[in-house]
Image: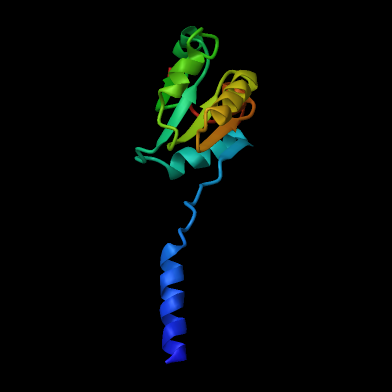
Length: 135
């Protein structure tokens, strides 16, 4: 009888305890152009993956990574445009040399994006690694 009451007590207490919701750790990292290429290849066809080119539209027109979306880091509304993006997607961010994309990475971290990778060396490093761009 006592063990049955103890078991019932445990069930009742366990029912009152709420598990805390799991929070997913934020991933904000720098990666090389070669690692960026592998990330792109591994995410071909993945609707939850996006490539952001944060150069000016003029720079973008000179050549970009296939599938990239242009969002000008120097535009007045850059942070506002970033905040409209789905924060649960995975993003690869790059610019010309890696400086603007590093700034974008910091802004995205502050805005609560879940997973963002900055390609160090930018499009210059990408091309130096012999990787293709779209003209």
